[in-house]
Length: 207
Image (cartoon, rainbow, N blue to C red; front, side):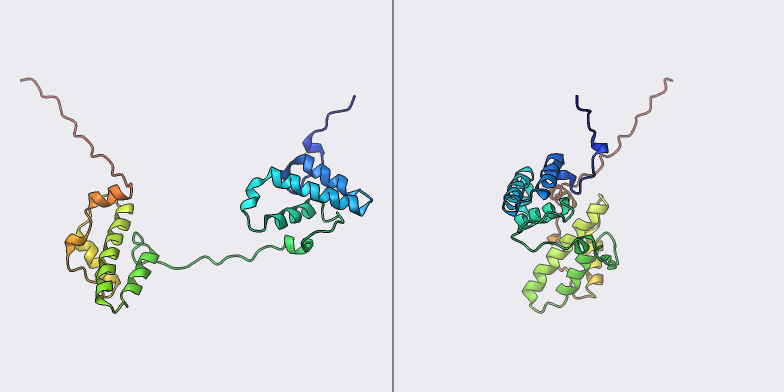
């Protein structure tokens, strides 16, 4: 009677997502002496790997990715004719360079850096009709961004003043009624406001 074998006692798999059976198939294919048979086995394994991970088909050049995984799982010891350049282990083990974190900052955090950047760009527009349209659009965007962080009413005059300040006087909203109401903005963006607390009525004392 064969003793039970536990996964913890077996060699570690390089890519566990494919499962132990695929790993065993690759280990077996490495030992096939005939190159023709070994190539045939490798192609069959690639087909199985693709069926087990259909989501990889959404990845660009997914077949190339499957062959790369085959070599990784074989510890780069399988000698087969790949339709793609065989990856170099050293290249795959290289640590990617650290990405620099953007250090952009907004004058008013609740408006956001990119909103303020759009205001600076709109300030340079020369066409008056286009500039008027951008002024109204950006004013409503400022109000929406403000209400996202502060789910309470905000004076239109404050929004107009912020827009004027951030654009260095270039964007001036002449008609405050062009701003959407607070209720309309909150409803449009699915922002919920906390329900007002009900005042507890005290019991009247009997005289």
